[in-house]
Amino acid sequence: MHLFEYKNRELYAEDVPVRKIVREFGTPIYIYSYNTLLNHFKAYESAFGNFPHIICFALKANSNAAIIKLFAKNGGGADVVSGGELFRALKAGIPAKKIVYAGVGKTEEEIIYALKNKILMFNVESEDELREIDRIAAKTKTIAPIALRINPDIDPETHPYISTGLKKHKFGIPIENALEYYKLANNLKHIEIVGIHKHIGSQLTKVSPFVDALKRILILVDELTRQGIRISYLDIGGGLGITYKDEVPPNPSQLAKNILPLLKDRKLTIVLEPGRSIVGNAGILVTKTLYLKEGQEKTFVIVDAGMNDLMRPTLYGAYHHIQPVVKNKRDKIIADIVGPICESGDFLAKDREIQKVKNGEYLAVMSAGAYGFAMSSNYNSRPKAAEVMVKGKKYELIRKRETFNDIIRGEIIPGFI
Ligand code: LLP
Image (cartoon, rainbow, N blue to C red):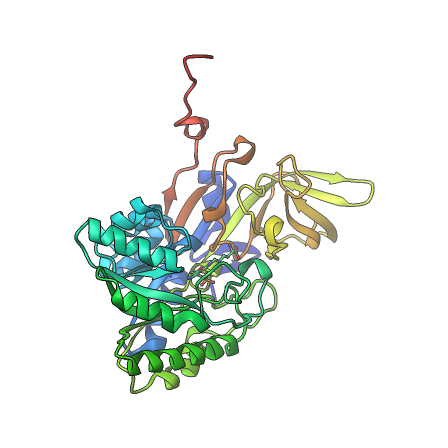
């Protein structure tokens, strides 16, 4: 569900015509719907209801300060994977005690930063990292709260680049070794075991991999309890999919219905790390058609957004629905919708049927709120896009379009040149 709908052939973001926004702020531009974001966030809150829970929004999906602030104001926590994300989460007002920190390569500086700020827990991904956190906590005279990220060896049945919970992946600790590492953690003086973590992949369209992985984790939790190791936080990661084309993923309440029965009578706080399912369909990328080019074998619609703005089609062959900002009655064409970047891989869609567009008309790339702006770059020295948030009839810029000077900020010409 989202609030980007046509009214009289014209695409609206909530109550604002998209055309009005692009006329004011230009293209390419990301537009987010406040109420869609909030509805998606609240869907998790209400799905888990009275069961103790923290919804830790995965900042990697979209880390704009305004978006994090919105979740912070509504009781959200954060799942971070770098010092930069931790900085953003704290700055937006997410309480440190609602921040979990994952990632296979945390640096000493990042670990110190997180310890100083007293985050809820480190989701530890290896023995080396566990020992390193213990050493750094000792050095800084603190105790580090940790969960071990367990790799349950469950196939999430999603794109190979975004699946993480199989033995061959770099993430987490193999479930077979989990007990041994928990015992080790228990003996480390500056480590306090508080939780257990798993995340098996992203854009999951079935509930069964969540359930299967959780069952494996719970067997481990029981064994830990028998061994005197108490787990307070059960972090089940993120990963719920969204509809890009015709997928029908489970919603948060279906997820909750399937997993809460497995948790009843357990004194646990459940932590969730949703990213895509909250922001994905709450954002669109609007681009302007620059040229129509009839190639020898194909027709190309050349637009002003490229793979630097939205990398997903290039990187994963991901499908994003593309529709005109103002519908017309012209014939349909089959075309590649491509950006201005000097790479053949620079496309937003291939062999796509769309209504014929004229130069200067706008197209909306749907479901672009997650891993869209967050993965954008300055490749080809293109300034990063502007971002706008709409709430009802109101709309505001939440990130200025970059300028050429922004692009070169930080570059230094050495004296020897
Ligand atoms: N927690 C952990 C430990 C993760 O690694 C991820 C995503 C999430 C939570 C959030 O997952 P979500 O709810 O968004 O599925 N760039 C790719 C997606 C990479 C996902 C990486 N990890 C894409 O554009 O599809």
